Length: 307
Image 1 (cartoon, one colour):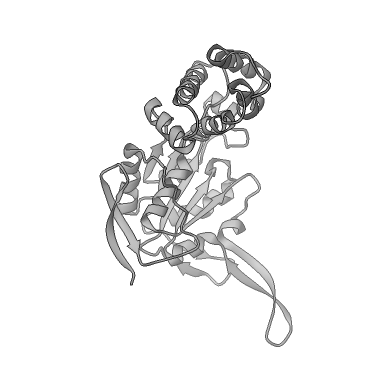
Image 2 (tube, one colour):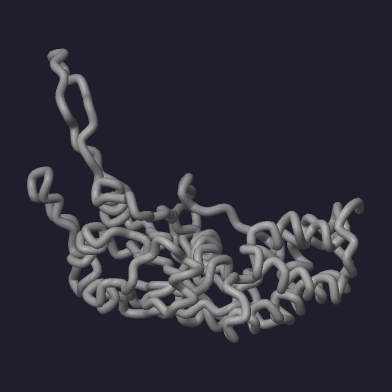
């Protein structure tokens, strides 16, 4: 029997509505060792409880998408996640005509709804990743849905009007809403400035900053428990130095928690310097490589081969 119960998001003291007695293939798989950040959960909880459309903004790898996925898992909610890019068009979201064969054997075209109207009608959550890389026509097709009392009108079919199911929730992620010079360098392909009319329709913009050092250490330790804690602490300190260098325009590369985890996993097999080259340094431009290579060598020495 399906019922709504109050469920505590682990280690936050925040209780949200969870659907019990319900299964669906779009419910994300939970990560038992996931660390919820109370400040982010508080702001996203506001959006969940009020139906406010939410835009999460932050550098790559800071956990924008994962927190929505893990909240959906905790609350047993189906979530459609889509990545947008410069070649995404409105049919990717709204749907398009597909060839079909009618009962009399004649060939015809049948319209199939896309993931957005499906989520609206059935009460799923939807998350559009990299919305700042989408073309303006894609953003324009969202505006009527995102405004107060929003709806979707399937103009290309028969003008069907879809109004959001009470359980429908809309999330999007972006690396930046405006474009400082460093963001333009880091995230090529993003728009110079997200359309103001689209931005205005998000009732909440949540900035997802890099984790505090203690929490980042906890996350890495939980996900890579076989790595010595001294190594974990060193990774986090190096990431912190890199982030300061980025903010001071000494380098033009991010150092995300995702990148920390990749490095930590590789360090269970290789010497830290070799693991750093494999997972971090080889992704960088030459100038940034040399700067960060020096930082890593201060902690781990110059050995780059073997284990």
